[in-house]
Image (cartoon, rainbow, N blue to C red):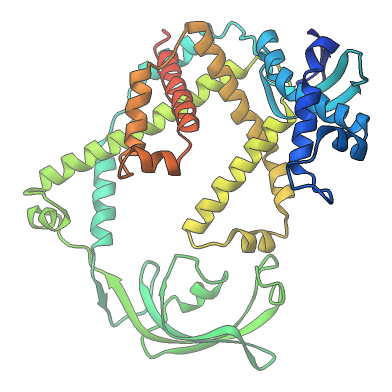
Length: 430
């Protein structure tokens, strides 16, 4: 078997394979047998048509073409293994010659994983780590005070007050919105709770409610924003009539040991403050770690140049699209409706995400390059431990094997662990 490789733009490769007649002629009988199993001819049971009848029916060239495809299917994986080619995506196969008695010649064009040659990255990564070490994460008392205040406000009861409404108050209002003397769709509500300062209504509405007291009625005109989601209202004036039914303010509880007990399993306010301190500290550590890792990955990518395979970029864009759609649905947003409101198609959204998709691919590739350079590999025991965490949700191994692709799960976990170990290794470069 002779193999000739040619690099193409966009991380593609043309692989020309020449297979001697002595190697691929054995595929002819297999091809004829396969065609005989699937053909139905009068006078013969399905699958029992003799090979000579198949040849008469379809012709020798059709059998040779089928045999050539069989030969490609059997030889191509061997070519990739022999030549150490990391092909990705769906290859395009062109049969150049499959004449009887002659060598089989075919050309495969496929995307291949780009070769990543790391630049002298250690100096930049050292600097990032040293700067991070100089600025350890700390939590101030004022940050704890701010969080404690937020918690107390969340638990503060609403008390009805006899005064004009001010920012921060919750007001219960009846409102009617009209255009040309007609109430617009969704333009009427009673006892509607509105937090002044939340900016949940169109600009100007809350300003009109400020200083209004319970029982007071007011009519005013406002314009809907030009970019308002309801196109038939965008940029148009409307008449608003508002009646304030109640003005309520939050009365924050006193911050003491009794308050701490209402928040959770805390006997004292000091214990609650310590818990808040720990929570903020862990959150900031996680944020700082993420920021450091982003800087490290950017440093690794700087100076590295490679072409992104189209199939890899498309796969990443589709993954991002699925992630976004899933997050939208968790918030009760139908992704198709979101696209309609944005006036965009899936393809347009993916095109906008191409730079981000390439950055994610690049980060993955440089991490793999560092792992290879530093010989970082998770052990079989570590991978199995992570797999067991997934499989514990199934009754037994048999059920897990039916419902999940175990080899695929193994590969995904292996990659995740390798990336994690590589990032930890990079964080220790000093």
